[in-house]
Image (cartoon, rainbow, N blue to C red; front, side, top):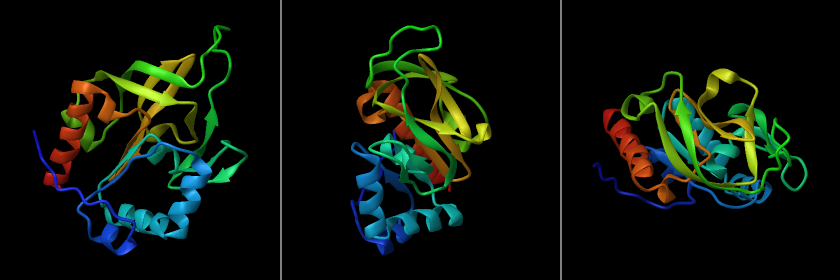
Length: 189
């Protein structure tokens, strides 16, 4: 099990110097996007991704990467990944009523190629808490799916970007495997 030194910062220069970035998130899309933009952290995140800085987005840290969200009206995201974030529908494809927010354990099925996936099992079970889910415009950026009414993108990424809709910090052994994989990936960069 890998150990990392963690610095919490709101300083774009400190973010630029970091070996990797983790953007966790619980909260409202619009408020988070506005706060990060006001501190110029959105620019630092994009510049870091362009340089190949490893990035782990968690929940809102995934959603903010898309073009926009419909939470509390349409709000602009960081446009790192094409697509939007939208509320779960009230009914699944089979007509069954969905409880929103989606809270609980769900299996994630990984797919595609990414350095993080080399250390993770083909599927694992994680804890979710969210009412909104990403709708990527590019299916190639979807690295994992879960089912809630319909399949949805639970993991997205490319290059130095890996972001998840679930909460690894609440996902017991599966979450530890994911965080260990991230630490191993950083060590290999």
